[in-house]
Image 1 (cartoon, rainbow, N blue to C red):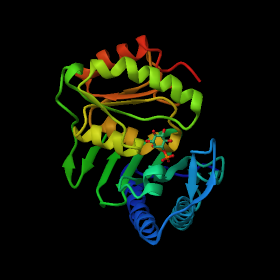
Image 2: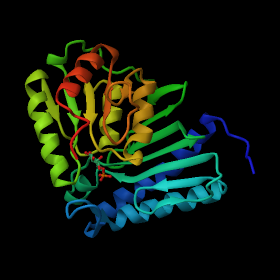
Image 3: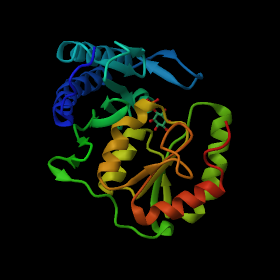
Length: 270
Ligand code: IPD
């Protein structure tokens, strides 16, 4: 059965309504103490009880508000009707390693996709309560201010954020790419949360971002925020942003960053 498709603004309202208490749960559980509950792809890819609790809270809230939708979550995977036109994409805690170590830099990331396209998203910094939102075609915002990205035009003066996967061989490749990048930029930042990196770049607090190996839940909400702030968000050579590579940069930095990453075979390797 086909369901009518809601306005992205309505989906964003729901996303925000659900993400805020979820972020409070993450922060409260952090204050109560955190331990590794399990490991995933590798021994360093951890999941805490809070990742699971936050995901359950979001899924339950969405089930009440939007019972016919599907939900893809980092911890429990794909659930819901496969004919659903609306699918929610959730990272309950992006920045899990920061969370584990008590570094206050982690976020709840929740996006709504309609017919396979992300149309609304919110990233909520759970420790500080900062929040970035976007709707497709409607712009990106933080605290009522429209985001437009950095005005830097020279890659050599750009502060570039990136991240690394959990797999050893992938990291070795990412390390080689980094070695070829660091002398061509002002500096590199590895903050530990891809969703927050994308929002910070959307805001112009950092100039650009790239990373190989992002999952849909790392990218969905932050990627829309970056795009709606006017950044170019893609993979290499016209490919869409995805697991092979995500580049997010203002138009003036995009081409030199893209070409450097292409020379370094950033989308290659394991
Ligand atoms: C990770 C973070 C990190 C990025 C990794 C992601 P998680 O997500 O976003 O910054 O470099 O690629 O897997 O595991 O904290 O949800």
